[in-house]
Image 1 (cartoon, rainbow, N blue to C red):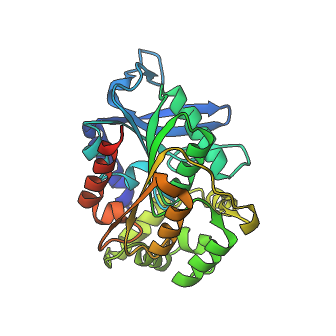
Image 2 (image 1 turned 90 degrees about the vertical axis):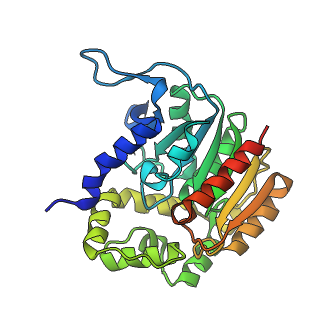
Length: 309
């Protein structure tokens, strides 16, 4: 039987190409590869006998990097944002390690390793400066990139995320939404589990046929062992938590009904980040704010980006 989610992928790929981005694979180091969707104008077709296209030029517009969360790969996460942004920005959408076809044979599962690999890939693609948008797990990677590479990251927008997943935040967050572990929440193995994830991630109740839930599970929740290790690599002890001193402008763009990382966590983080941080809430939206209210989200995002020097 045809997997309906898999069958829709070629259509999504065509839509991305129409929006001005195309797929490109980068070898980060031997044993580690990352998939990116990159501006079409930076890539030329492979010559006869060549397997992979080559980078033709550096980006021609200000660079914007969109980093996905834990439940889906890059272009699935940002499908409603890409077309709204490519006219003014050179948009890069990576698949983090163990999402899409990005993979590594290295044992490191930390956000720091994700950040280092992602930046290596961007540099190989000719990116020297960028603004970064991160959602959920991708937000934690975004903070790590900005901390490690302050000269590269000019500004960042973070939605539904935190600086680091401490023991106490992990326990209180999971307890408040009725889950016993991050894997139970973010790596559902059944239709019922996926429905439970969607119920806490959205403001409005979404209805899909059970068949579509099953197909989504098969396509989007691969590399389960490695992803479980990524979740384990996220949690740090409370005593190890430090607040980096970011010099970049940081905009926290939040669904006001986010049940996973609620408004109180967002406000606390704004206070921790200091004067460089601003906060904006979007009503009638949950954790998946960019998918639930894409038009409002896109307007808010573009307004912040336009305000930057």
